[in-house]
Length: 303
Image (cartoon, rainbow, N blue to C red; front, side, top):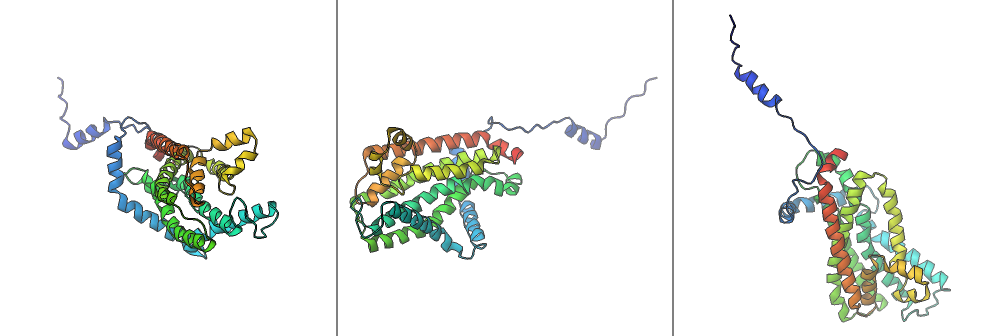
């Protein structure tokens, strides 16, 4: 006689329900939120982003003797070094004007452009390593990981604010011209931040997949420094060969800093420089967002 099987207990049925379910976690982009949803999530964490940026600044400054002053001294020292080298190459700084500018004005111009260039140093440097530094927080939290490079960029913006006052004082003391073109500076700076954020998203993604990318980014920054009109006037391109001139013009930072240079020397940027800056900024921001969000779900696995 067949013995009927005993009905499973509630505890056994409970275990069976869980054992029959298999969860598979894989990187992909099937469940990416829409752009509006993603922006809303990041906006909801804006206070956390600001607090994290301030905390990172305080933490990095606590390990240095000069503290917050170093964010100003570093570009000042670099600008002074390159100004001295340029002066020596041109045969001394005996008060002679070059391109209508005195030595003090040329030094002030280089200082101002160096301060602006530091925002891209953040995008290629600190922001690109932000996911690696916050690995523990990423693995134990559920929020858009884009807040980490954004936080790094916000920190760079906070450190940039004192540089504005340093430049204004230097410009007044050296007799730099002030023109109506200054009204375009905030607009250009907004597009610079857009471009910088797009670059930061691209470099951050690359850093997760290739850990040695930081070495390459350091060389990229040095190359961009010499291809960007920071330590040389835009007019100097007339004396170089067509190949070098083409390479320089292909630099995405060239139209932006050519416009900056025109404004800071009392002129007006060309329409082509402004439109090229806008085009590069939008292109980098869109590309950075697409690349970052398509790979975002796989960051935790690779970290």
